[in-house]
Amino acid sequence: MPVPSADMELLNARLPLADGGGLFRLTVRDGVWVAVEPQAGPVESPDHVPIAALGIDRLGAAPRLDLEGRVLLPGFVDAHMHLDKAYSLPHVRNRSGTLLEAIANYRAAAPAFAKETIRDRIVMAALRAASYGSATLRSHLDVPVHLGRDVAMRTIEAALEARELVSGAVDIQYFPMYFYEPSAERELTEFAAETLRMGVDGVGGAPHLTPDPAAGIGWAFRMAAAFDRPIDLHTDESDDPAVKTIDIYCDYVRRSGYGGRATAGHLCSLAAMDHREAERLMAKMAEAGVAAVTLPAVNLYLQGRGDRGNVRRGVTRVRELAEAGVPVAAASDNIQDPFHPFGRGDMLQIGLMTAYAAHMAGEEDIAEVLRMLTHIPAAIAGVPDYGIAPGNPARFVAIDAHSAEELFQELPAGRWVYNKSRWTCVSEWTRQWADSAPFVPASRP
Ligand SMILES: [Zn+2]
Image 1 (cartoon, rainbow, N blue to C red):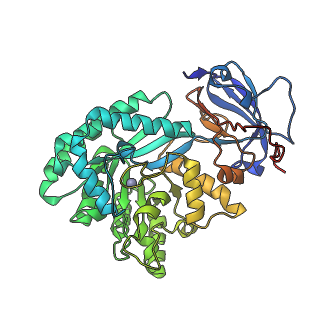
Image 2 (cartoon, protein in one colour; image 1 turned 90 degrees about the horizontal axis):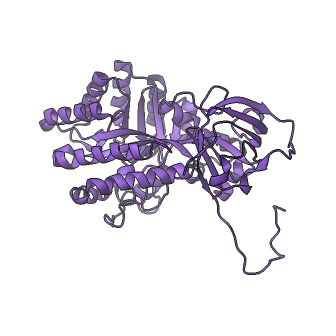
Image 3 (cartoon, rainbow, N blue to C red; image 1 turned 180 degrees about the vertical axis):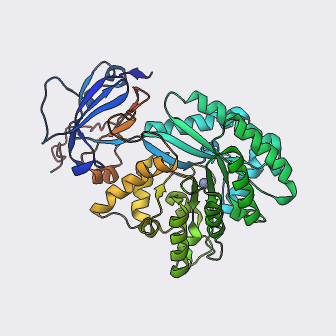
């Protein structure tokens, strides 16, 4: 049960993204941050209850909480997911581990998934993500209209129902992946227009997988402009350095004035191509205002499957994109489906994968990785009033770690999630030794 706690004070909260990254006293009124005050050091207060002492039932009744130096972050924004496919792995396998087999097998299985099945998968995946601290999710949706309008519409209806069901815990944006085929343009346009009127948020797609990528990108921009919606395309999820639809994508963004409202996910071929050509494209993205989302877990799984010896790992040029001035977010992509057998919707896990895959594990890199899970995707997703600052809604996760590095060293289970003016979820684990173990220090040496 959600626990009301619209007014409260939090003591000894560690804010790794704030100036100095030290301890803060935070005040919430009516679910909104009203004060964010740095502390000179740890403060002891008999009036404040240690947060770890209370379960979800009692948190709301304790208006003064002591975080005891634990990290507090604004609610994560997972800017690229596939909630409709989550947990489908037992029904849809992928023997080769390639993107193309995943697509083919999912397409073959999709007609047999009932609307309720898809809805329940979205609900489960969204709530799991919320329990790890995500406050906003952007999900792409599988809508292969050319293979059957009914199946595609079933996914849209399931998604809209699911969003309603979880609205007390997490916000979801939907970007259907419209598949453009010139011969079926009229049907696709009608379908897309109907779904945009029904309440999906933007225009998605994967033009590099369609017969005529340039025409598909052009269609996506006409659709987005007609409905005044943002655009978010799967872009160049390929090991082939000759695949570079990002070039055309940037041209359209410039021409349509879509800078700041256009996102490119994956960009795998960017990592495989000649450095000089990659630099040209990254500069073009920065200039056009196209944001990037890296999906390290899924691309480490799917890409480079044909390589022997020097295996390409498929993760885009994360650090170089950022250095070129492109906003780069990291996101989950797929969860326990034929596109990716692992994952749990936990942004700390994605941050850890990003740190490994992009060689971003230096002390100074950790804050940048945290921004790739929070402020950068929030800007990409257009989340208003985001962050821990007076006047913004209090949406945050407190995590059982005492430094930014410890978040990725331990992936702590202990999380206290606050959203929509109340505590929504508490997760903890306990270790129970069979006998007292004097060789295990009670705290860090
Ligand atoms: Zn994707």
